[in-house]
Image (cartoon, rainbow, N blue to C red):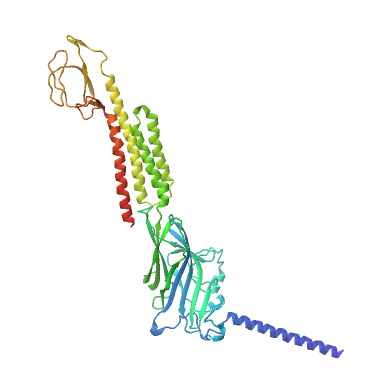
Length: 475
């Protein structure tokens, strides 16, 4: 009985010892992963930047690979960009044993938990509205640096907005033998851009992205573009824009009054040139055809009043509908497309006003014709012709004589009276007789004939002035 008890006690003691040993081994493995004692010295402080020569700032090389640019929003004046961010800096305080590198490699990829213990630069997008990693968007209002703060917030669903610090656990960190740290992250951001639309739809938008250190001034951290700089995806295509290349890169130090200091800043300028083909097909060509269609009304006589009015009013309504339905940026100043719209609508409106004028002149002409006496007077020497003399819109019937006249005058004798000189023709006469051909000229018909040439000429002059000036300004 005693032997059996001793055997059970011995087995229990041995089993407990084995479990304790396994627990310590597992804890040691966890500690080894969470606390990289292999590369970080005991006195390493991640809040202190790496030492540099003679107090010079830490150089952080920056590069961007643009994957996609989309959603260029003219109403909110911003655009969305998907990109890979790469940063490099030298961390001379690291202690790197050779056994952590695979054979033939001079680098090793670290876990995100390990990178949390490193000193990290803190660049951010100065003009970003929203920025984030992966699929969620996180807006820029506050800065959360350490892992505890990030984990305390729901990164995907939280309404607490924050600046994208370009350092997140869903990233890649590479450590090289020469103690260079390379940080890479896939990001997307909505970048604000102050757009100008005076030349719309041939406008060119220059949209910068400003990258700046948040808390370290230019005496501590200096950002600079790497040799690769900013690279565009060769398959990148924009819907309504051409992306001007090469991109303009800039390095500067900007004074930030809210942070009271000069901070290192990187700038890349994206040049978006709007494609005119869509607007040529959807706006300029149809509106030009509508204006030309309105000229057909000059060949329609006043006996086709319903057709003439319908044609002109339809042209006017078509232009109004065309321009109100166009995708025009809602800005307060005048755009190039507004000038084109005004020119087309003014041309059609002038044609409609011309119809009103000729109709009024025709009514006056018919009124004057109806006042001519119906009776024909018989004179002593036979039937004598009567002529109609239009003087200031009045019609008078007189007997013509053979008295010689001077040009511009007609000698008339009524009822045997003395010859009276004819009054000079008034400028407001609605009809007159051509002295060369003797053909009666009616004012409204002459206006229609002149309009057939004047309206196209004026519109073509407008076109010849509009396009060269617009092309010159846009270039």
